[in-house]
Amino acid sequence: MATSALLKLGMITVEPHGRPWAEVLSRRSDVKMEYAWDYDASRARAYAAKYNIPQVVNCVEDMLGKVDAVLIGGGRRPPTADGIWGEEPDDHLKLARPFLEKGMPTLIDKPFADKLDDAIEMVRLARAHAAPLMSCSAMRYDSQVLAMKQVIDDGGLGNVAGAVCMIGTGAATLKWYIIHMLEAVHTGFGPGIESVFALPSHVPVVPDKPELAKAYALVFRWTDGRLATMMLVCDETDAAETKERPGRAPRILWPTASIVPPYLPLHYSIRVYGDMNWVDVRPVGKGCYSRKLEAFLEMVRTGKQAIPLESTLELTQALVVAEQSLKSGKLEMLRPVAELVGG
Image 1 (cartoon, rainbow, N blue to C red):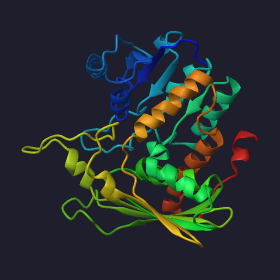
Image 2 (image 1 turned 180 degrees about the vertical axis):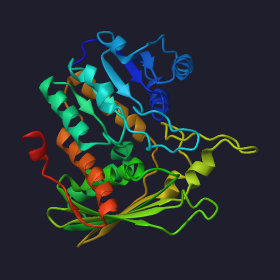
Image 3 (image 1 turned 90 degrees about the vertical axis):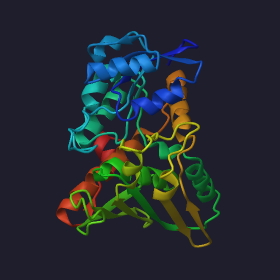
Image 4 (image 1 turned 30 degrees about the horizontal axis):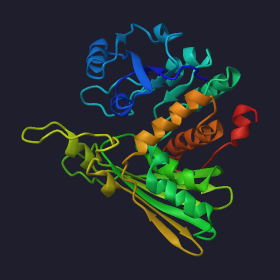
């Protein structure tokens, strides 16, 4: 728990969320970003100069004892020139370990981990050293998602049967974007995901780039029988809107407190069905980063978990199992979270 009124923070890796997080944090008077580190030192220096961060360190351990908390804004090397986000494995466990072992509050970019063993180890470290740990999609804090949760909790839909969701993205691996929809639904439904069935489509949706043109259909089932079906389409629409191209003005990729990318309302949708009513949710991102970071800072101040680690671990396992289902073409079961972390 931080004792100082002014929280000192360290940012670990710039891409992709170190920038939008800094956009929000730089507006606050109760925090100061003191240190930065990135795989690319020149990128870290440019980032530090833009956001008035005094020091760039040579290794993340140089921040120990000098900050109240750290934020891992990406935790994976940027893709190669022809690569896409999500192909490089994450270093979340490696980067977070020194801080978790010191009991320091740590925010980790989504998805929490590529490998279930890494996720389990980070949860173990957090518990063993009383280190507040947080990782989630910002969609958990979207105003419409929060309103959906309230309607469900109040019984406004009756008995909930399930949800139908769609997300359109640029080229990306499955786990990189499906976490947004899954976390949003999980916020309303609560824990208890039992199984996943996932299938890829081989029908091109970007004719001139068939290697990028894929869709995925997934069905998540909760232990009480509720279903969430999700379609992810790699249509490259949002990426095309934000890429730097001749004659095209650059646009901001992230939903800051005041700027919402135009693609968000078009490419995120959820409909939740109950036996009494249904509700549509169109997350647009406005304010969700600010609310997410406020929840993190409150966790730093109080030392209390912002999100149950069991929920984070369940969501991570669901993503890992979804990728297993894509390969096997079969329904794949999740293990109870209590088995993973010993209760």
